Length: 94
Image (cartoon, rainbow, N blue to C red; front, top):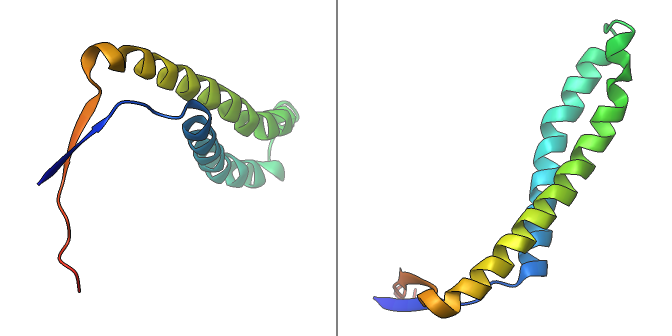
């Protein structure tokens, strides 16, 4: 087994990937719900169209900021703690 130590995460790259994943996940669940409610909803619920389009954007921005800050904090403290150790093993060649 090989031990690898992770001492730094790229804040922008990780934040971008997680923000896109969370946005797609929210859209997958929110948009079909909106389509289902669209034809039979009362007048008040028809105003959900703003929520449907803003929720994925909100999730993108908040996930990006959260992961970005989390990576910065990890990078700051990893110099004191030594980072994260991961044990990996090589696969036999086919």
